[in-house]
Image: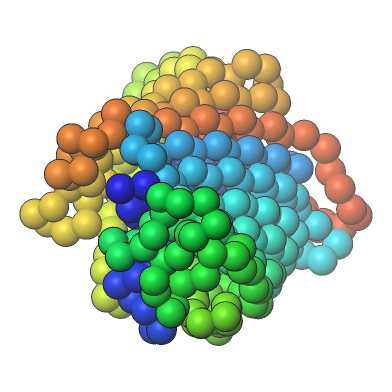
Amino acid sequence: MKYILSIFFFVTTLLGLQAQQPAQYSTYMLDPMRINPAYAGLDYALSLTGTYRQQWAGLEGAPTGQRLSAHLPLYFLRGGFGLQVENDEIGAHRLSSAQVAYNYQMELGSGVLSLGVGGGWQQLTLRGGELITPDGNYGEPGNTSHNDDLLSLATQSGSTIQLSTGIYFQSERLEIGLSAENINAGSVQLDQLNYGLVRTYNAFAMSRFEVGRSLELRPSLWFRTDAIESQLDISLSAVYNSNIFGGVSLRGYSSSTQDAVVVMGGFQLSPSLQLVYAYDVGLSPLQTVHSGSHEVVIKYRINKTFGEGKPPRIIYHPRAKG
């Protein structure tokens, strides 16, 4: 059935419509600002990251996402500033967002502790003419109907405010972050549907270990939950000779249900430019109707100081921030 994902999502939840967890990205470790506003500026450069994701390739109406983030340190404010825009589409449903972030950074032991807040806007668009219901009439032109009082054939849209907050600790060998998205639990009112944004909590951790003079290992994890459903990514990535990146991840919803194995690799094309590709091999029953998921990331860092002020006592080597 065409756009079956959107039909299941919208029809089964009816008037109490709730948003899914925020869009997932397999390369989460390359830009933690996606899930935590407290990370802004902790690349110690102007950092630009563009991501494209095609999930469950070959399945009609499957999720696709595009995201662009930019953040930099502002030493005269003793913190960092960031901006990110994102588009997440599933069948006839599209959720677009734009958010700014600011954080305050302070030295803590041998590292930096950052406290951040974010605020922005989210817009929901539902293209009703692309939906198909079991009892609808779609065969004769001019006589199209869903035969459902809750669903319209028209394109509807609405918007709401989104707020987030987070805390992040970074040292040379360890990074830990906690954050909450959609803390105001806003909602979008369409003609007959109320689309609620679910408050989501994230925990992120990554460490670094040098193996010899040319290899660095980076185990990481990302846990997120809306207090009803939870998801965990466990990853191990490596950087060889400061310019070759590779890794593997396992993503699962519980201890007994796994979603995908992720294989990723990339190159440092120049001192400022990094290119990474990730492929998800599905493990859930849905794997029989799709051919995996694809994700491409381009990251560009401009090693230039912006704004006057005193930088942190320790700024980590650029190799650690690739």
